[in-house]
Image 1 (cartoon, one colour):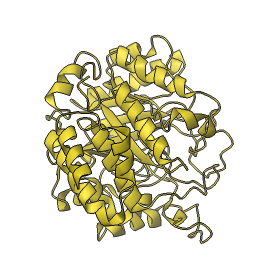
Image 2 (cartoon, rainbow, N blue to C red):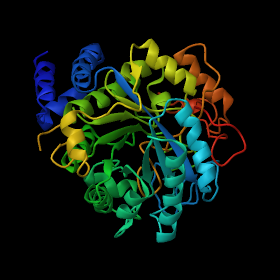
Image 3 (spheres, helix red, strand yellow):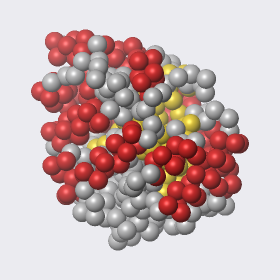
Image 4 (tube, rainbow, N blue to C red):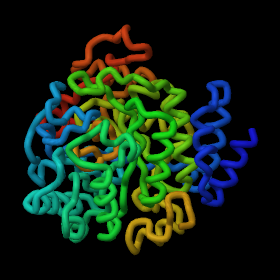
Length: 423
C-alpha cells in the first residue's frame, strides 16, 4: 500500500505526515489492519528495537476532585464506587512503589486527584520523591498533580522528579465538551512549565470519548508540536456513575489503528499503552506491543488491570523484552536534547494525567504491584483481573453495541488499602 510505504519512510526520517495521511490510517479497513500494524511496527522497531518500558502508578490521593472531567471516576459528582482517601505518607508511597519496581517497572508515576497542587502539596510530594529515590537507586519518578503554578515544576525537579505528566486528552475544539472547570490552554501551559523547568514532559490523549477522527488527529498533531518525550495513549474506561458511562465507541481494531496513527505522527517518542487496554484491546493486546514501546504494569488508579505477571508473560510471548534500568529509553538525539530540558530540539517525531483529575497516562490512572497469580493465558488474565476485583459496572449492557462493562473492575487493592497490590 503506497500510503503505508510513505508513512514508514517518513517515520524513519522523523518527518511529519500530512493530516490527510494520518486520517487515512484511521480510515483503513479491518482487512488492512495487519498491514498497518506491520508498517507502524517497522517505525517502532527502528527507534526502540523490541524493548518495552514498564511504568508503575501510585495513586497518592484518590477521589474527591473538584474538577468535572467527564471521563474521570474521581470527578466532582461521580457516583462510581471507587476508593477515596487522602494523601499517602512518603513511606507508604515508597512501599507501594517498591512493588512495581520489583515487578520490573523502570518508572514510578505519582498521581494525585485535584485541580493542582498547593505549595504544601508540592512539599509533601517532594518528600515522597526523595523517599522513593533513596530506597530505589536509578528509578525514574514522574509526578502527575494537575495544573502547575509558578515555581512548582522547578521545586519538583529539585526534589528529584524526572518527568511531569499532564495529558491534553482531546482536541482543543472539543475540550469544552469534556471539561468546564479548566481549559485546554491551561493544560498546554502546564506542559510548557514542565519543559521549561527541565522536566521530561509526558502528555497524551484519551480515545473513545465520542470524538471524531479529525479530533484524534488534531490532538496528536498538537502533542507533536508540544514535543513531549512520552505520549500515553489511553482508551476511555466508561465507569458507571460518570457522564461517559455509555460511551462504548472502540473496537480492538480501531484501538490498534489509533496507536498506529500516533506512532506515525510521533515516531521517535515513547508511545505508552495506557489505561483501558484490557477493556478495549482485550485479546489483541500483544499486537499493540508492535506499536507502543511502553506500558503500565498491573492496576490503574481506580480500576483493576491485567495481572502483573500476565503482563510480563505477554511481553515475552510476543517476542519483546523488558527494558532494563541501565538502558536509555529515548533515541540518542532525543535523549541528548532531554538532558538539557525535555525534548528541546528533539521534536515529537520531528527534527524540530495529567493534571486536573489526576490522570497519569491513563484514563483512570495506573499502577501495579509485585507479581500476582499467573493467568492461564493473556486473554484469561484480563478476565481473571476482573473476577478478582469488584465488578461494579455489572453485566454486559446489551443496549449498547460492543459494551463490555463486565471488564471494568474497581480497584480494591494496593495503595489506600491493606491488601497487596497487583504487579
